[in-house]
Image (cartoon, rainbow, N blue to C red; front, side, top):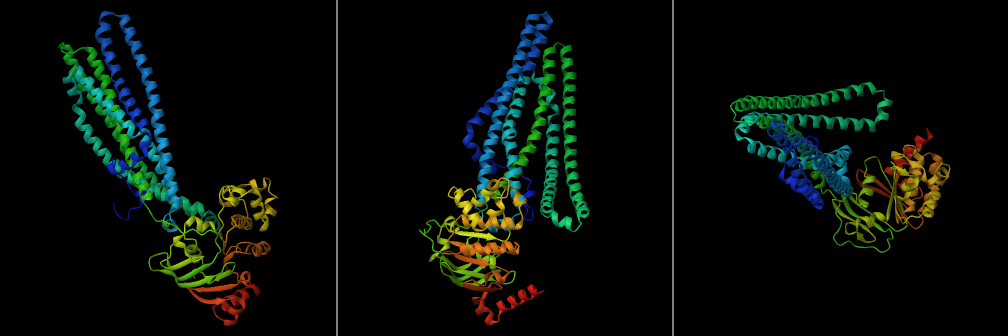
Length: 592
């Protein structure tokens, strides 16, 4: 596979033994359904060619002798056969669908759980739409393979084998004449598979472009509307959509040629059979019943051939999907947990950075030789221009990323020696861009934690003043929250995020420009709440508004990833350095 090919352009073989071996691992817990389905397939396939044989008996044995009783018995036998076949087909469909659903349930859960454990670095380089496609569309392709692909292939193969057996049992010469078209059919099927494979690649490529365009423009729809770009973007979408349609039409063309070609070959086989079989009947070498049976067998024989071509497409899609799924499952971009983590009984919040270097990409360091100490209960502010590395300090303190060199200690323990869950349980982060989940206000504050009681939740909301707007809502704390909190204002979402942080009672509180999106009144309310909240806790505050951090115990000035100045507000102003310039700049802006 070419290195520049995206995951969405993976074509996949119709059958890949390595991928199939891995897929069988998920089927193994439900092997009883597989065995039952195969047995039912063998049985139902054996019933299919019995009907033409009963026709042969009726034509050769009952009709010439006017045996109405015998004809009635044959008719009843055919009806009973059809009913039995319908019952078995129902059971077969039920158990294959059950197999498919249970298998993809397990696989989807594993894929989701695995994705949750991946490091932030993975999501930096992987589009969200691609991950969603893995858990939805690609998994559904495997369901189709498990339920109507791999198992039902056995049915088609067994039907063909049983028909072969009955035909050669009745008359081997007529069988050879009938099957004379098979070489042409096999060659046509090979050509069809090759062309469909190529068209399938084009469809997947254009579908990926379509999905990417849709995701990007739905997310940024407000920007499109604000700049009146609806018509231009519609034209761009139309172009991508046209390419996708063309690829699909090309794919349909091959199916439109292949299926009539199979019908034509079937008709030619019947014509050869009538020509040869009719002559044999005239010469009394063949009975009319056998010829009738062969006509039915021929029609039955070509039906599974067509189905096998469709199964080929299902298998190819499933193999491509499984390759993409396993590629995601094999991705181990993780922040490793120590094998024997160090446990801290009661975290005090003593933080120390020792000669810390950090880079998101290889050697492009965004933090350089950072050393600082934060005592328990201290409030430390970090300021600096955009890109100075302020948010990066939060990312490495919470171990969303691991540092390149140096050490970060919490209560004297290197955080790489601590369990990630325990570390993060003691740190609450309030970000500028608040993310709320679909659900209720209560579920967004408690995050489903059974340790947070309703009383504790309400107390947290009251502490930041969120209770004032929540109590005015029709359902109060049970009020529905739409996707990303669409029905709430920016300030309301920010207050909920503060309540969420407080409800978890952290020892370390991180505020990453947490008040920059709220109005002055709300900011004053939050500042008052923060003063109460910070008592007895270690706090790291990142802020653009220097007026909000004047009371911090220590202020750290970052510039291009390095600590340039430290001190309290008055000390830094007296130095007339970077902090002084930032303060003067904001002061002038406020005056204007």
